[in-house]
Image 1 (cartoon, helix red, strand yellow):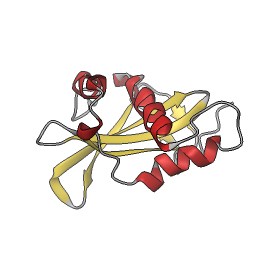
Image 2 (tube, rainbow, N blue to C red):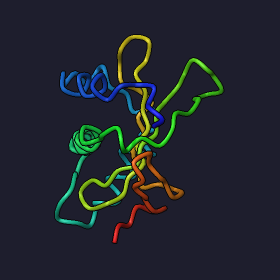
Image 3 (cartoon, rainbow, N blue to C red):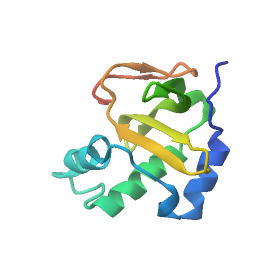
Image 4 (cartoon, one colour):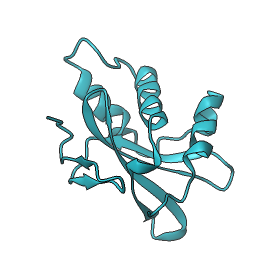
Length: 133
């Protein structure tokens, strides 16, 4: 089985510290703003940026190795590798991407409905758009 570059236990340990200075959303419009827009008209779900960050981190915290899709090179820099995952969280399909940087911080976080179908190493199919039947 293909494995992720960044062990999930290391990612979870960073999240569990609760230290938001160690967590960076590289493209907040591709994660925080998108999640807020999705839940805007619903009674449940996050309603402000802080709640949304917690929602996203909770989603990442549910990942298992079988949710892994692939590792990608960021910014055309072979030393900047991020892992991509597909998951079902709160009855929706999501694309998640992140890495652990050289300082041990969690960064390059992206979290939004997938733009293309994702197939995880465990065989889970997350449809484009994230609508789960």
